[in-house]
Amino acid sequence: MSLKLPEPMIAAAAAPSLYPELPDARAFEPETLSMRSMIRVEPMANSVDEPLVELPSVRALQAQCANHAAAKPQEMLASNRTESDATLLFNNNRPIQAVEKYAQAIEQNCGNVFAWANLGVLLVLSTEPPLRSADEAQLALQMAVKLNDKIDWIHNNLCIARAWLAPLESVEKMISDEACTTARGLNPANKVILDKQFYLAVAERYFVEGQYAQAASTYQIAVSADRKRDCNTSKVHRQTGIVGSRARGGGGEGGSLCDFAGCRGIARWEDQRV
Image (cartoon, rainbow, N blue to C red; front, side, top):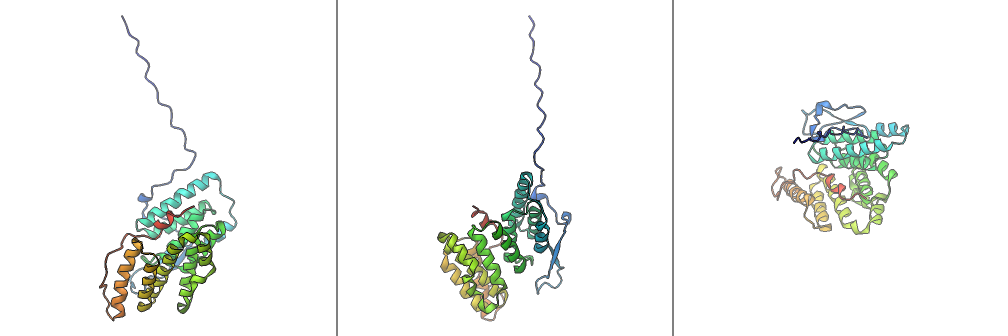
């Protein structure tokens, strides 16, 4: 008796991808980046040996988008993936590459509100390396608000960018700015969190300007606004130790309760998307 064995099944060919594959963010290397439109940011004053840092220009992106056709669904998806890669880069302490990827996400889809918004957040909050540019941040956040004016944290960060641009003597009064008022009106339940974020930024401004007594008192206001322990609370403990030491004439970091290294600014915005 003979048996007839079934013919082996041939696997179907892989279906072609409808959308382009983007490289894994973890594989990016600084030397592979193509810097197109740039602004030049001076290094911090105490880092005289550091070279200038070059970043994509928000103004150039806006000008490019003014003449850009509406993104197709395929481009929107690619832009969303690139924006997620950018956030991954920033949360892994690679802010220069993150800025470049946010710019790429905007080039793929000028209507990507979160690419504009998170680019603005990065530019206003970054301190290391010296990426902070409140003027560029304000432009990016204004663009995000224009695209979607119903997101409270975007308005709040626009208010923070304006506080960085305001004269030092009036910086705390910026909480009455239209952007801050709009943020709290959109979501009254988030007022405590929004206030904490604002006062943390104001305290950082005082700290950078060497106004250590005002910085210490403003950090305390931020903590009293919201006593929830998070990366921001750790930063407050560390910074109050530093400002306390410097206000007394010291230069060390005495009084630090914990190190907040690795607590990046954009991660918390991702949880508030609508």
